[in-house]
Every structure is written in C-alpha cells, then in structure tokens.
Image (cartoon, rainbow, N blue to C red; front, side, top):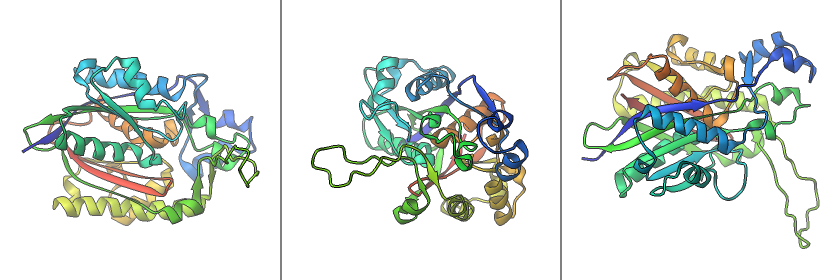
Length: 325
C-alpha cells in the first residue's frame, strides 16, 4: 500500500526585524497595545526580497535537510496569496531557479490554510500518479499588500517562507488524517486581501481598486476560535486518536488570543501548542511550515511523535492534518 513520508523541512525569513516600537513611529499604536491584543512583539519585513526569493531560500534549506537533490523532485506546489507575478506561477519560478527539470509546478491560493491544502494535494498526487517526491512551500511577502497607515492590520503581518519535502514510501503513511473546507459567504464579509477591478474600455465599473488587506477583526476572531478546536476534534475522531498522544499542535500563527481561547475550549494546556507568533507575526501560508521547520531545527520532534497542523484563513478556508513522524 502506498504511503507518504515527510523527509525534511526548511524555512527562511528576511533579516529585517520590525518591532512594535518601530511601528509606534509609523502609526498611532503602542507596544503594549499590540502585545495585549495579539501577542506579537516583532515581525520580519522584506527590504527587497520577493515571494519567489523567500520561497527559493526556504526550498534550498528543505532540500538540504531532506538529503535531496534537484533531480529528485518531480512536483512543486507553492501556497501564496502574495505572488510576485500573476504568471508565471511562483512554483514555476522556483522550478526554474532550482533546476528541477523533472517537476510539474503550480500554485495554490487558500490564504493562511494554503500550506496544509498543499500537503493534502501533494499527498494525493504522490499516491495517485507517477509523482514520487514533492516540494511544498508556503511563501508570503504580505508587506506589499498591507496598508501601513491602517493600525488595525499593519501590526499583524510579517514576511517569510517555509517548505517541506514529501516522498512516496511503502511504509506506514505519515499523514494519518486530514480535513479541509471553505465558506465563501463568510470570506466576503470578513477578510479581503486585494480587489482588482476590470481594466478594459468595456468595463462598467470604474471604481478604484483595493490593493490592501481589509479585515473585520471581530468576525475573523469569532470564526477562528470556533473552527480551530473543531479541526483538532475532527482529526482525532477520524484517526481514533487521543489528544494526550499528540506531542504538539501547530496552529496557524495569527493571534495569541485565538490560540489561548482554542486551548480553553479544548480543555488542554496551552503548552501543547507550538507558538512563534510573537517573533514572526502572521505570515499566512508560511506560518505553519516555519513553525514545523523550527521544531525540527530545535530537535523538539522525535521519531514516532504525532503532531496536528490546524490552519484557518481568508476565503474563509480551514484545513488540518494529523501527522506521525
């Protein structure tokens, strides 16, 4: 029976650190206000590196940690909501930069759930096609779609990329259970990253394009604190697993208050959640793979450990995976 094994992880974030104190000089806010409401202390902001460049550097790190070379990869999937170009896709650009001549390549747009969507899609393609090894990446330069005069959003987001390599195996499947879904009605009412208008002589709507993230924080919070525990419960139910056997839950790193409330609703210690939102902010599709990469970099995961990935984001989308290493 075909299974999928996770070979390794990598990540890369811009060197430029922007603290809450730095933001105090840009918009009317304070370090204390941001920390109390989000848990964020600093974030990485690009000074010129694009989404492709961040993804490429994370990919190199993941390939090295997986003991893979470029010719080993025959599938590349990139999750992003902030591509450098509409086309070619970010994945195709990465394929070219890496020289992975054997690889099919495409992007996924599922906002902050994008990496977990990519994991599920890559796993299915590996099991169902002739593709044997996939490189999946979440990469975002959200700073280019943020209104830096809007204190309700500019304090939340950061730039970064994370990557993983998956491989076909005849052993036990590393991906034990998954779930993913969406609600477009909620998405239109709560979170819009950019809205492009028709630009033709025949367009009837001449309104100005919206280039920046717009968010109704209260609506997003209510959705997130509800769906995050449900993802965890669904994954445990599908795999007939107990929460006590889960080493870590890696949630999308959006807001510390969301994680606190999810832990309370699940009636578990917050220490089971791996958290780095204080250092990176919300990096959308990159947040979960960055956290995964850090866990392995810090040697916090051992063979046999089980972890849960739980993501939610614009769309609205949500996705989860229970993984055994």
